[in-house]
Length: 408
Image (cartoon, rainbow, N blue to C red; front, side):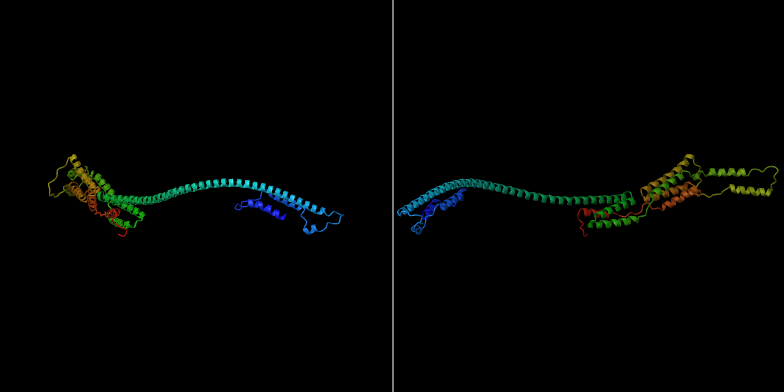
């Protein structure tokens, strides 16, 4: 049995493909093998030869010719059972192999199908990878363009900031230039020292706020100009103008010299009234009466010496004209004061004083006070020498033109 079984077991193995890997056993293969093993265990194994040669147990007398026949029958039965078992086992193995081959074919088809799907997925992945690479390259190019644009924008912003700072600085310098120009114009044209000082102080404050080292030369020049302006004598133009206006009103009440004889006549009439004859019954000594009369005559007669002929009395309209001329000369002096014309100021004041002395009695308190005021006003310098404050303006313009460096 062992040799035949081995040949039959080797026969299916030879039919299998040696190159093909051994497929996994089918689901019922384990059970069929266990059933076959149980059948083999149940089938009686052939007794060994020594047992066959041994005599049967003494159960009773048996004929000697039947033992070989029984053995032969038993051997045939065993051979027939083994052949059937082998055939059945071969059939089972064939069926199992057919099932395995079918499953292998199905697996091969599934593998081919999956392989096709995998190939398709690989192609899809490759195409997707290529598309992603192309998109990535496009994004990298776009990012590079954005970085370049961002850098350009930052540079533009920085440049714009510098331009704005430069514009603010230029605007501040333009304001300072305007203030310096105002100071020069007010000083030169209007002789307005106070306004010039205020404009210079404002310009210096703006330069200080800018904190630019190259503007120190301009600030130094402004400081020098302020020192020179503060040294200029102050002229109270408003006060002097009001004083001249009051003097002109005072001149309207003065009496011209040519109208003095009328005052003399009034004095003579008052003297005659005081020299009236005494009442009756009063006794006056003759010597005392003569002495008193002599004193009265001396008081009435005044001897004056004139180098010029006596001016006749003026009509009222002529006296008003004399007063008006004095007022006009005072008004001319007032105009000279407002115009800061020192030469004309002195000339008009001298002319007004001369007219006052020639045509009015300066012994009167009103005329004397007016003459004193005119003499005092002639000592006032309404046109003091003004300094040149154009240096700060010239230096600032040089800075604005870029011709002055930081170390200058």
